[in-house]
Image (cartoon, rainbow, N blue to C red; front, side):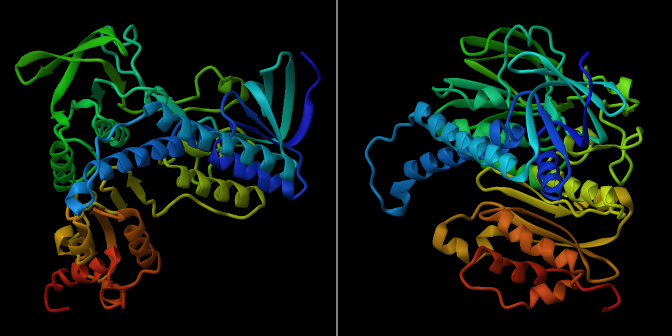
Length: 467
């Protein structure tokens, strides 16, 4: 083994939090290296968040054009060129790679492309992509290796070579009939996109509802919207076996109740969850412990069980969103500098990029019941938001949770046009701990979707006792 190169900070994985940390520390004069096995910038700009939303936007455009006669615009036959959809997405990815490489150059952090493995505490041996090896040792080390798509233990599924979200974004033709295993967020986004690109789509969900973490009324509304676009949905349906090969002809045997049936399609997409990329990278050699699910065990400061080693993002069990990884970067950066920053109590929002989108922040009704928190609940159909009179975007609703004994906003969920942007306003009010009446009585621009927050909050029941 070659002699170790010494660094101030060594980061394994170039995902969002890790690269931000590398650039920040390098600009402050630290000697920093990032080891990345495959994707410059991590999965978000290369194969996940940004590419998927790029193609989902293309599907939305196709849908709007197909629906144009409703708005008085007459069109000829609409045809989707999936190869061009993919090329547009790939152009964005290539621009992102260039921006990332430039950021490394300007910051002074070194990006090393290769497969890294811990061989000793805070020491990584790298098998370089271009050949050869390097041995790196950091005064501090950061694990930022992310997760990958889980493939369920179903007979025949591996031989069928199913699509994950990565391969689904590389198709030059829309599948004739797409079978989606999993009714979670990724499965729904891609199912709707390919339905709009022209595919027949069926979703197979083992649980009693799609989006199993959401309140039943939220899941039911999203199911209604998707069925309205012609997507078939099977609930409480457990895949028992798979035959054939995705991209040619594939069949999934499904148990539902006491019966079993076979679902046939041209392509199979698996979207049933994520697995941390922590196996086979030598964590035991570095004294780094994992939890029972294979995630790096960390405390609320994102410190691992090994002195001087931190973990960031999904591999540390953080909520699986890029914006959370950004906050993980801030936590680690500040704690490395001797401050005391914690992940405890973070108000984490998210958006599911269906059309209309689903946005959520804070408590759900299920959360409140589980935690024994008394709340007042109010809802507002999107058809009651004046903006939708002009746009016809009437599907969905807003829902807010307010403390039963005070006026703090505790949670917000919305299915509807611009849901993510509206949710950000509610999140700001929650961070400021504004009583709901302050936002209810705010002067919000007419004619915007956010204007619906006033009527929504006007529906909050009064506190018992007249408070």
